[in-house]
Length: 177
Image 1 (tube, rainbow, N blue to C red):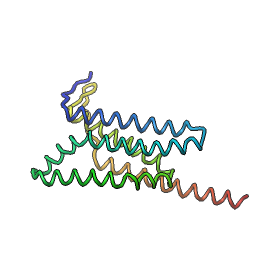
Image 2: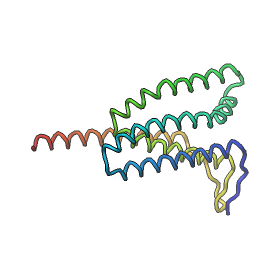
Image 3: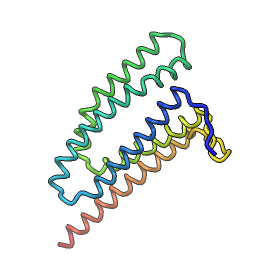
Image 4: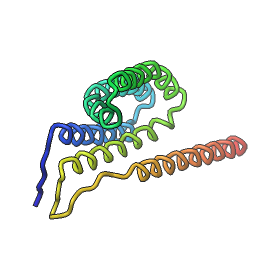
């Protein structure tokens, strides 16, 4: 029924994807279940802090996968090390800016959670592909990067249109009163 050849890379990638999916879905349901807006604002600030913490932890966990990918691209240790250090430093440097942006633009929280959800799906499919996983004799293939980027573009476009439509409705409502 289910067959595969798991190795460390496939297990880390698969488990990381499952964890990201779980975290994104949990946060989405948490945001939908909130009845107290003031309490939600306090929890949102904590949620942003948690998100940054989990990004750092996930970066550490997936550094192994990044190192393997970098080794496939180049054999120059200094290039690999430099790219990993620069990307980690960039994420740490941008974390406060992202948290501040999300405080001011609350509508992008949902977009970010759905992007995380899609990243989780991509990692699960990649982990299953690396493990040569077969379910009911059908091989699991990794999500194509072009599919991933296409879905991201559609999500952003939907969010932009939704935001403009919401502003239009609020302006019409303000004129009516």
